[in-house]
Each structure stands twice: as structure tokens, then as C-alpha cells.
Length: 154
Image (cartoon, rainbow, N blue to C red; front, side):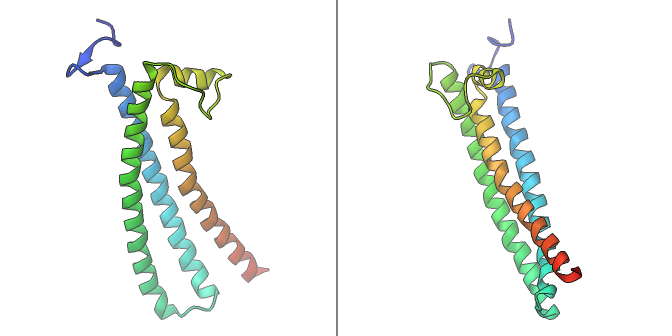
């Protein structure tokens, strides 16, 4: 039997399981980048608060409460991501079997054509879009830190 036709549990092939595994790799990597963004935002808060004239006695509760709120936001985002990526893979598997319209990913280049042929184009688009959120937050935190450092030293 080939890898394409060898069924597991009568419904999924080994290739399909690899696609789901790739979806979970995207999920874990986005969750890790989001956690890094949260830590960078916490770091920026700890740097910016005293420089803006905030009380050092208020910083500790604000830091702890902010970390709890950001952690809860992270948990909700990670739960959303798991479903978002898993349904992206499932939709890609269903769509692979029938002809579908053009995606925003493009169809003239080799990589988008290959992703579409493998049924991973929707997962790739979703991964890029959801990874942009924590990367933007991390960039904003680093930018806030750098602006405050320049304002104090310059």
C-alpha cells in the first residue's frame, strides 16, 4: 500500500495525519510567539511605568494583575488557535478533493500551487495571519521600550 491510500481508522491516511501534525506545530509555534509577546509587553510596562511618573508601590500590583489578565488572554487565544488551525486543515482536506476558487495566496507561483495541491494553502494563510497578531504586539512593546529609553537618555 502506498502512503496516500493506507488508511488509519478507515478515515484518515498517514498523509492526512501529517497535515494535522503540521497544524499542531503551527499552533504550538504561534502560542510560543504569543507568550514571548506577552513577556515583552510586561517588560515594557515595567520600564515605561516609572518613567511616566507612576508610583513604584502601584507597579507591583499592576504588574501582577496585568500578567494574570494577559495570561488569560493568551489562554483564550491559544484555545481559539487550536480550533482555527484544525478546521483549516480539515477544510483543506475537503477542498482538495474538489475544484475550488482562487485564494488570496495566489496561484501563479510554485509554492502556492504546491500548498493548494497538498491541501495546506488555507493552513498557511491562517498561520501567517494569526502569527501577525503576536508579532505586532511584540514590535509595539519593543518600540515603546526604545522610545522611552531615547526620551530619558536623549
